[in-house]
Each structure stands twice: as structure tokens, then as C-alpha cells.
Image (cartoon, rainbow, N blue to C red):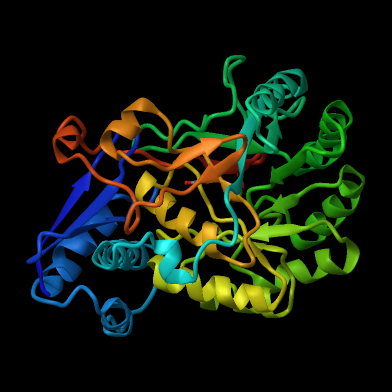
Length: 408
Ligand code: CS2
Ligand code: MG
């Protein structure tokens, strides 16, 4: 069996999805996602210039060897761009493998460990009242877990994950448009003073059953993070996400010594070497990698297995940064993983997305039900894709009030 063609598409409804389609001489094809938010042209170029020319003629069943060939063979290994490109190839090869076997991927991993996978949605509000309304809408839809972010009185700009309009009801509201980034101003003291009470107010209004998550988005120093974690302890959070910048694996030791709040980190990681210490020292409770830029199913599964040895559960990244293709790959891992925790969920389900990526994956009652179609169980409509093209965007940048650059 041989790979005869591999095509790359960039674009999608309101998003620059990078979709890879690998075609074989047996008519079976596989799909992969290389979307890297606001850097989408780079994994696309890495695929086009380096990986695709090598793929032609290879046996698609040898997904492990192909992964090693592209990873070890690169000499300058890793990084989000290369790993997103390798990840897309890997997903597509697993998709082909599943189709060849006539089995959904979760069966190739070891079979289903659960019927539906718990997901969480994003609730947000310009102020606490708007946040409460947003949470109430998700609860009414049957969500059992909700991430909550809200505007802070006196904060010069809205802040991470916060709707800046009254109408923003919890979908992804950050404005990424334009090549020059928007500037957000951040004030740690205001955040630390206000947010614990706001989180407590959500707990009091919605009661003990709702799983409440909160994302600090890398904004605190290790000492501040430890102090913040202590102050939110009475809320009973499901997790506290990215309390410190993720590069420093030692940063969470201080937090761990002072608090038992569950910690989730890893959405920006692209290698097991960026989280092995966090996992082995049991400094975290949830690992947040994404199959997209963590090197596809082959590498993400290694991380999940290491995590399982140390009581660390999964909480895969699922911002709209990812196309429904990698969300499908994660859904198969979620169905199988003995140490599954929760899945962030925002992408699938919009009519435009469903038209571009048809599938039988479905959300019901706050749970994600994976399709039992062979492979990833998702398709890609190339004619529909002709409606979309690349549009440049940028993450906001963050400065302190005196102008100092800070972490977005
Ligand atoms: C976020 C992301 O979903 C999350 O938890 O931290 O939305 C993140 O801001 C984006 O993926 C950045 O591209
Ligand atoms: Mg996050």
C-alpha cells in the first residue's frame, strides 16, 4: 500500500483550519489537522515543503516509523510548527489504519472505557451578572462543567476570556483579527482581589454539583499562583488552569506545597519532554495537550500513558484553535483513555463546520459521543472548502499598566 497524494487546505468558517488529506493507491484517504492558531501558514508550509514530498510512495500503515522518520530525522526537533505538521500526518495515517481495519480508532487503542465523555464549555461575562447568565444558559443546555471567566472592576481592558460586550455569551470572544495584535492591559492585584469572590458567587448560585473551571492564562508568578490557589480553595474548583507560564516546570512546586486545588496545564506543550517532570513529580492533576501540536495521536498517547502512571488525568485542549478533525482524534482517545478527565469543547456543532467536516460525532447532555464509523469518523468536503481562504490574525499582546510586556 502506498501514499499517492497529500493535499493541504487552509481556511474554514471564521477560522484558518489547516487540513491535510492523505490519499492512497487503494482509494482510502485519511484526514489530519495542523491548525496552529494565528501561525497557520507555517505548519502548512512545513507540510508542503518537507513532509508531503517525503510521504509520497511511503506505506501509510507504518505510522510509527513515519512519525520517527519525521521527528528524529529533522535534527532540529520539536516546536509547535513541526509538531503540528507531524501531528496532522499522524492523524491521517491513523484514520487510514482505522478505515483499513474497518474499526473506529478507539477500538484500535483498546476499546471504549465509557459511553460519553464529559466536556466543559466556556462561560464568560463582562461583569459577574453577565457571567451568571452565561453559566445559566449552559446549565440549561445540560452542561455539567463550565469554565468561568469574568470582567474585573477597574481592570483597564476586558482581560483573558472575557466578553467585552454585553452580548458575548461564552463562545470564543477574543478578537484575533488583523496582523497587528490588540493590546490588553493587565493588573494582577485587581485580579487577585476580585476573582476568588466572583468564583465563590458562582458556586453559591449554582450549588455543589456544577464542575467549575477557571483559566488564569499564564498570568501569575509562582508565589502569586500559590496564594491565589489558597484563596480559591473554598470554591471547590474542578481545576485551576495555567496558573503560571508553562515553560517553567518547577513553578508549580510552590503552589503544590500550599494548596490542594487541582491544577491543569499543557495546552501549549508540543512534547512529552515539556511535561514529563510535571507528571512524574505529580505537580499537576490534568494534562492539557492537544493532538494537533503535540505530534498527533502517536505522541499524545505516550503522554496520556505516562500521565496514567501518576494519577494525572486528561483534559485535552479544545479551543476553536482546533478543527473538528483533531477534535475527532481526541474524542477517540477520550473514549478509550483509562485516565480520561474532561474535554474542552467549543468547535463541532455549528452548521458551517458540520458542512465542511461531516460526521456522526455528537454532543448530548454535556457528554460527547464519539462516532463508531471506521477511522476518525469524520470527513472533509473539498467543494465546501473552496468557499474559504486564509485570513491573517494575531493573538492579543498583554502589557502591565506601566507598559511592561506580560504573558497573553
Ligand atoms: C485557552 C485558549 O481554551 C483555552 O483554555 O487558553 O483559548 C487559548 O487562549 C487559545 O487556544 C490561544 O490560541
Ligand atoms: Mg487555557
